[in-house]
Length: 131
Image (cartoon, rainbow, N blue to C red):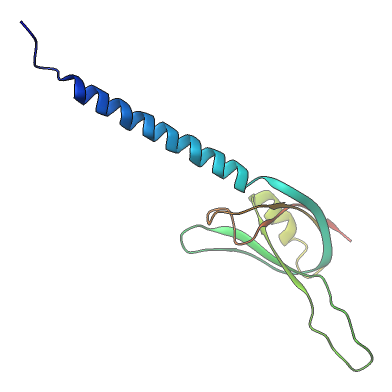
């Protein structure tokens, strides 16, 4: 006599769902790693004009640095160059906040793509020092 209480196709279907879910998780992990890979690092100097904690759903630390501008001559004023950046952790944010309105050097990492919960820009400041 055959036992018909446990059908074989139901187990097979469940196995494929688990395999699909694991495949999607691995693909997302690879995409996340590639997109957030640091491909450039450097530093910029200027006057720190803004640092804030903002966002509707994802709160992130964002800032602006006035890196200066080029004057075309006497009496001519060119617009200044504003560089926008993000900060990943609160301790770095607090250190940057203490230099508000002062000339600083910001060291940063640039990533390929940022997700909304990481920040508004591709530039993430890792440290700050007074100029």
